[in-house]
Length: 149
Image (cartoon, rainbow, N blue to C red):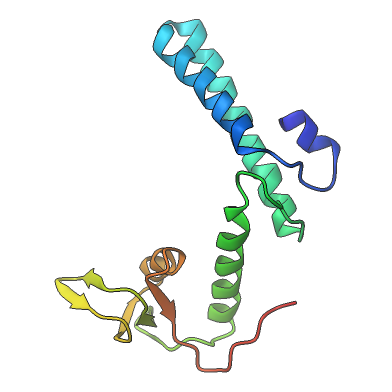
């Protein structure tokens, strides 16, 4: 997979079935053998998977689409991260003491309190990003939303 991915500027389509087949092979390998040689082999495969992730991530960051590949969810996550990052750096979100103001989208138990949709809360940026990616909160913007095209 990695060698195919490196040959083209655009991302290759990787079907879910291809990944499931690989997962099965690696699971069998892990369960069947427990020696140093096979442990090293699995480590090499893990490094290849990491490289595949990095290459595909770079292609998405360059604006290419993963289409209907098994990992197309990366695009949505990166889009949300990019939008948050740019808006945060540009000062579009109310921030107080290093915390960003967020609107609760889905009910949330946070710091001992149940928050309902529509509630507002200042939270640490790292937590806000995690909950944003989960669809639980969204940062409040001081400005009308504009998308980068």
